[in-house]
Amino acid sequence: MYKLKSFANGFDYIEVQNTASSAKIALQGAHIFEYKREREEDILWLSQESDFQKTKAIRGGVPLCWPRFGSLDKSLPQHGFARTMLFELLEVKEIHEGKTQLILELRDTKESREIWNFSFKLQMKITIAKSLTMQLTTTNLDTKEMFLTQAFHTYFNVSDISDVTIIGLQNRHYFDALVDEEFTQNAEIRFTQEVDRVYQGVNAAVVLEDKRRSISIKSSGSSSVVVWNPWIEKCKRMSGMQALAYKEFVCIESANAFDDFKSLKAGESHRLETLIC
Ligand code: TA6
Image 1: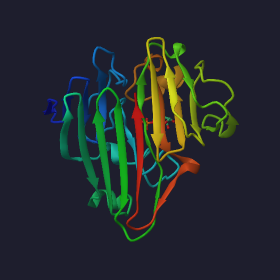
Image 2 (image 1 turned 30 degrees about the horizontal axis):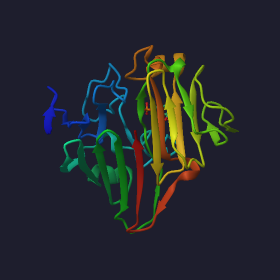
Image 3 (image 1 turned 180 degrees about the vertical axis):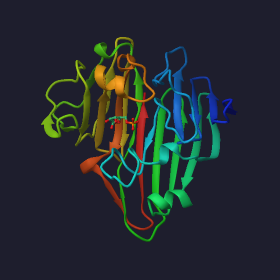
Image 4 (image 1 turned 135 degrees about the vertical axis):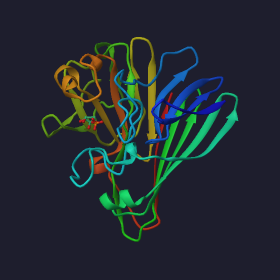
């Protein structure tokens, strides 16, 4: 079952409910801001200060970083513009009683071409079941080559950040954005300070171990993963976050970031896919 709904301010979203799970997806940014499995806490964290204002990115859920991850390209907003643009809902398919698939699409507009002069098609396919599958396919409809970095900037709900371990990134090289230096990850990741890292050469599932559950994040079309928690001081400076919000989430972001960028010739496509289960 699914319903098209709007908040009082006209912010449109789709509510999905099936026998295995439920979800809410904003048309703006094709932004999944709720995903729950039957009889479980929300898998995704959503800030209590999220006010669902048009053209303002939702804090939490799965913001789409596209056509850039990060802020290296000063001609574009941090993490690109897709997360604040209105996608078109093309299709909702109830595959079976426990699996619902949605397809949303964004095409270039006069506004987008003013800040990023490309014709493109961006399609987000979301499968809501006892697992969550996200497929983001970029097609270069322009005549010139397209440089692309991107990420599913997923905020995972955790019992308490100090109870969290991230497994599967051992021995991977990473860029530490806090000190602009490269390191190698030795042990499993625990949190005792701000962490903002881009891991490269990732080709296996990453596991989020929390006190109450274990979540696997497996990607294809990607070999980079971003791990972020703002910790105490940065959290106080973050927009749309309460001061203690850092305790409640960790971002594990399947990406094409930094060295894992993609370059699409005219007519070429690339799909970034992530399975969360
Ligand atoms: O993915 C980590 C990061 O790049 C952090 O440096 C922090 O800026 C975070 O994204 C949130 O960015 P946003 O633009 O959503 O406030």
